[in-house]
Image 1 (spheres, helix red, strand yellow):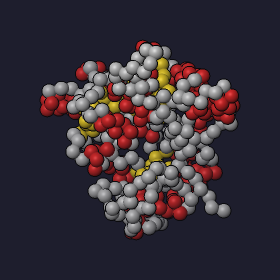
Image 2: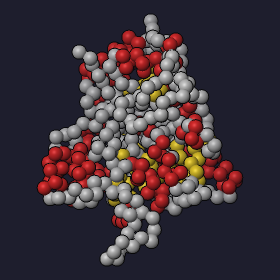
Image 3: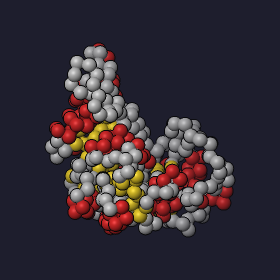
Length: 414
């Protein structure tokens, strides 16, 4: 029997259908309603710190609205972590602003505080203005050096928008990620720690900030008996149906987080004797990652079966299953790509029924951002060339992890 082990897929608890049925029974099949309100309350209790939450249609929408609330507009600059998914930087361009990319440090793989301050000082020197916001990311669930980042942001009086899309339930020094900055972003895409099928949320400081975000998320309507618009708004509110899924997912959120940590522990134990494969883990007790995705680095000298044939042909479609519409690749190679042994490992595991994937390609290396300012130290590029994401979701069992590690060993040349 073909054994398929997938990278990360949120697991339904079975309780979601009750909340969904309730929405249909009460005719709340719209982007507001009792499930939306209750889901927001569940999230507020979960993250603590007296924060307020707005449930939205996507994590990208949350980034967009947070930037808008920070006053980002045409001609502004926003400092964004380079080593991440494009949803952190694309909304900056939606607003006519320019993403300024900052590289990572090697401990957490997240925004380097030293480079961050250099970037701020240099942008002030070059433009005469400071950046309008800072967007650090909790990559693969790993907390950033957020206390250092916040200290720098406070020094220059720049608001921080924490992209905790991958960091739901992760903690830094005992405090939930997403609660340190002015705003925090969550994602409930189908591959996240919990899901609403699609969707996201924005963590706000207080009720006033929440109301302002909700105003823009619901088309920015003024209080007249007819539709009056004095500002541009967006259709970003979460559906009551999706929020019903979220309510069910919240009942197993802690269980999901603990399972991901358990899977990480299995990888740690089983990979301990595999030379040339290094698991990324919490750098100290300050960090408490949810291990949304478990990631490994392959030593450049590790030889993998088939590496001599890596990149032999162009990929057809998107690696990783359903990922929307993609353009056909124009060539086998790009200017920066994973090492041949990493690509060979991905292909080898795929043949064994195991989905793996390269790490995020840094944004400063993306063609669409080739002309953007970037403050780099080589860390994210080095990680991208050497790294691989392994199956980590709630469906991944101990038997699966043993099979995955066994196949990694098989893929390595003797």
